[in-house]
Length: 240
Length: 82
Image (cartoon, rainbow over all chains, first blue to last red; front, side, top):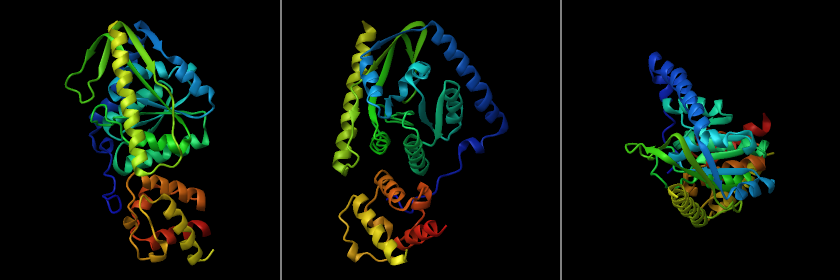
């Protein structure tokens, strides 16, 4: 049931104390941006099936990038480069989301806030309306975010693609050598300095503007299968 | 546009965007919106169909706080006369 559900709670970012807010809004983004810039300078990127991304851009439709939450760290700086176009993304309204939004904005992403419940619905709504006004703006979502389960595609990206008329392009990455944060729900992957970062693109997916519930689920499952297969493939490429 | 006209046009929109088969002839202003079987994603269809049909830009929370069809008609009435 969606009607009568509880209104969104106040954002944790407005409830945190001043010291924690200062840390998350000023210190953490600055450190994260500096670290990513420094690491990115040493990383060697290698792309596989880039033609899928280029073909989607050439089709003249909005691109909807489908990322996995645990690989965002590898893709953030790379996809934010001007040759990949302008991007719109979503960050949660949590304190972590505040820091992440600052980092993404520094790397050229436009950010809309929200993640689940009413906030998430409104954020998807805002993203769709924003892309409808500016179809050259690509949008992207961590499709298993904001809190998993890992690899499980949430429905928001399907709605985003349907309503913007956009093409979903699954994009993911692997790196070697790298370190996996085993205690994180998304198994965040952090490449070491001088790592090779492999970025892989999946075939674009065009969705009909209207879907019945079972068709919606079929597309969601199809995207999940494709990005899972893509992740396995890039992991193999990375291992050589 | 009269309230009855708005109600009829709203019927066309809800029949199109609802996940369930809706017989609008049974619907009154007191009918709860939740009876149409919208979930968090199909409600997006409703919002965009309302955008298209009535030129609105409703927030998700605005829709979700409404209880009945009559509440939605009142909202649309306000939008059209604003």
